[in-house]
Length: 250
Image (cartoon, rainbow, N blue to C red; front, top):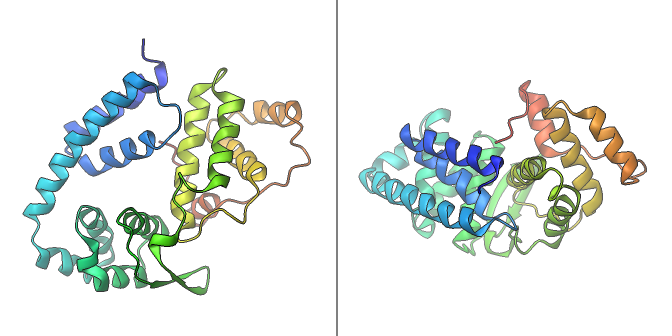
């Protein structure tokens, strides 16, 4: 029988598909499939829904002519943000100038991170520049470590598996989801300079805050002897503080 987390997850996917929110559904599915230890029956259903979303996205993209996409890239901030999903299924080697324009724009770091992920998926070996935290950064997407290649991320995910897989799989799933968001916000950087344990502890803390379970978190820290592990401030934490919004865990 499917566990309660996946029952709820697939209900959310169905709702988005019913609303024709195929990109949102695809992004949720893409992140979920990337997680370790997805049950086989759930993985098969995820892949079915992913193909369904891709079919609609490709159809939608083909109906969007290049001129309109380019106009959006050079349009308002809202249009630039909306252009990102359409670039995902295109051959980005044909849109290098447009990609650089988007990286130079004032779209959110979340959107820029998503765009960099798309460039990584297509193994684009061209150098781009972008400003991040007041610094001008040059990067080549094809040499950035993916989540599967980044040993620090894999070790963090293993901590979540060890801590929560048996006793609290829903909490574990939220940790995975938040880690995915942190990866996006860090791009074009990887995590090779980070220590896995403080990073894992910070993710658990934010999930506990979002779920209003900080009393349990304090007990967790004591039980696992994490009280002397440094407390990190994550990119997603800084983003939510600057926006004045509550953290969104999906």
